[in-house]
Image (cartoon, rainbow, N blue to C red; front, side, top):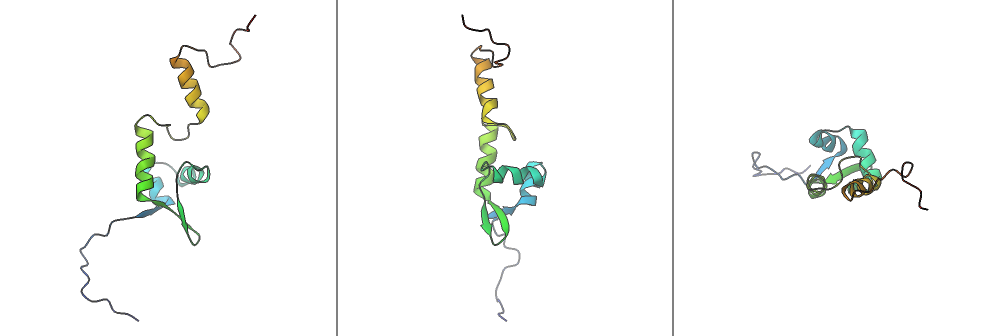
Length: 101
């Protein structure tokens, strides 16, 4: 067994990764939502053995993208198209659109 000498126990070590549960608590969603986000490719992650970890910089980038005009959590590309259509004054609902003559 190795003995580590001269370790400053008060020294803070910067977190490089977070577990799924830690990410969920940090952004205020369920761990199931975080699982869906990383499985869909919306949230980058790494695997260490069987553990899924989210790098701190990836989590920060994920949050920044959503607070600066990116998609809100759970939104889809279809939502972006609908928002664009409404901003352009186009009715995004194909069921109520007039037929071309």
